[in-house]
Image (cartoon, rainbow, N blue to C red):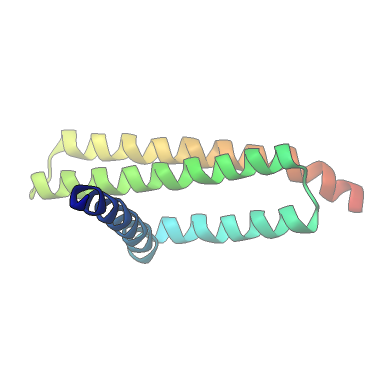
Length: 125
């Protein structure tokens, strides 16, 4: 019985660690704060424009993909910086490619936003 309680306690703490990671990402990464501002705007627009359930699914998925990409990129950059204390061309290239992955996700999320929100905004005008 104590093993089950111990396992449950570990699962609960894993959520605590994950939320701490999200907090640290937003606190330490300027781009994550930009993504957060865009998220707040998208969610507010979604409520204001009364987007459909399926549109909400696309918006939420786009938001999640961008934040996940930013988190993975941040971890990757921190690990590379830890491993390579001095400038290394391959490390720079790897970090640039990882940042490019975030940009790809952000552009895709922006396009999803345009597809969903632009027609609704144009109807209001």
